[in-house]
Picture 1 (spheres, rainbow, N blue to C red):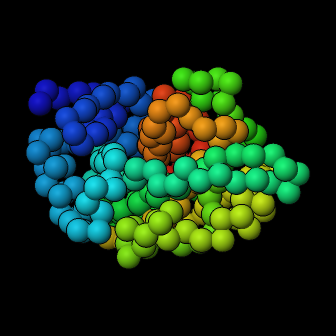
Picture 2: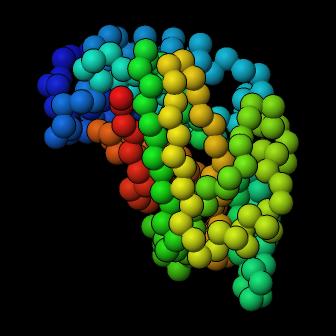
Length: 220
């Protein structure tokens, strides 16, 4: 693979997709090794039979100091209906994201989902809201309904008009796994795909083709 300047970030999407992004900050740069190395890291890090059939996208990132991390995003589960206390009807789906620290240094992840509704780029008449429920996600829940997330009415009632946040420190070779709920104003014609992505040190959450800024990863 040809060399690229350090001011470019190269991120790899498993399933043979690859993009380059211009990086105005030098902290996060391209992998210096061959792409096959990333595939080996991913294969080793995601070796879990519970995940088979539920993992949608996998991203690998590295910086000039040798720090590296992985971001895994799931397929949706759900599609159930929800009615708020005022009688408004919605449809929701549950996802999970896992961030794996492959470095010798801890880093902080800070995510803030806005309280405002967003528009689906493919169907602008449909509004959606992102919610970070406080319930912890674990591997043993992957095959359960809604990935094991319960008390949905309570979670959605308490999150309708609020920002939801995640602020965690991930130690070396540790992982953080969390739920994301996408609630839409009506049923979506087709499938929703969603997941967390990193550009420079900024985190973005992408729903179908729309990507919004939601936070950052800060290396210590």
